[in-house]
Length: 429
Image (cartoon, rainbow, N blue to C red):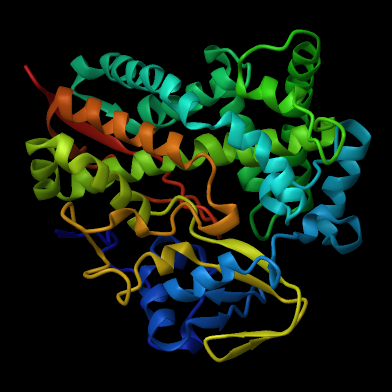
């Protein structure tokens, strides 16, 4: 086991009056703030966002399972409830592209269940098994490109292309287009941040519209010539209760939100976080490489638990309710804080340590829970597994390159995204 908090001087609020979760410097290392909330205010109203932050594991489980009280409705999908910035984006989508409909993650039952059936088919166990060989081969081939160099910028050279190439192949995009698509997903993520200027909103929206026009051509081709890809299923499968397949606005929502950001960006961030943990904790690296078959599955779960790529998601309160003794009025927004719940000491012993012997390591909430449990979790787990299987097979020692890293993350309220990771290593002979 090893301590994993990285910042030498993280912001440690002494009281709730000092808690500022939306502060970029706090988001860089939010764990001391999470610890304060877990101890003193498991349901806390963030003064900047106005959202109620839910941090305890058991409370998150309750919220995630009670979809009638805690809806996935989001104001940004409804023109009558948009902020001024969202209205700017909405106008641009109507003029130049397709206004994204509510994505799968932004729907409630029965629509959610009806729509998810397409994805359940696309991500069925047999298809994941079929992809497993491709993931394995890709992980080793990416590593071979720089193994003789003894160093690399790990995020760009390995963590980004592995899941992005896999999802691109399922979305009908050629491998060589991954960096164009990465530019679009980066813009989408930035466009969802706080404090953007009107110009930044316009830039992010126009980038998403570029992506829409790219994929619109793919949609139209697949309607004429279906194939065995995931995207072909999404384009052509009729939802029985709707009497039709997904329309263009619905497809464009899925492409950016659930497929590319949800299906590649989050796995990229988990792979990068895992390598950072190994570089910072040589004892864990030694234990992992001593018996990869034994320790890799638990290591992958611990990475997601400790450095959750998705730190939080929102829910809309549909009726007056109460959580942990705090009244939540109808119409309020809550943020289920996975990053805090996954370090709840009442659920996880030594919650701030990475423990390759941890029992029930997969009980974390890094992939959510209940109806909205991440449908891509099985594929993400296989991508994590093969990423680090290749690394333990081909690398003997690994370390952070001195003077090259600050281990900083993009300031984002919901996602945890490492900017870059420069590592050195000695290949196995």
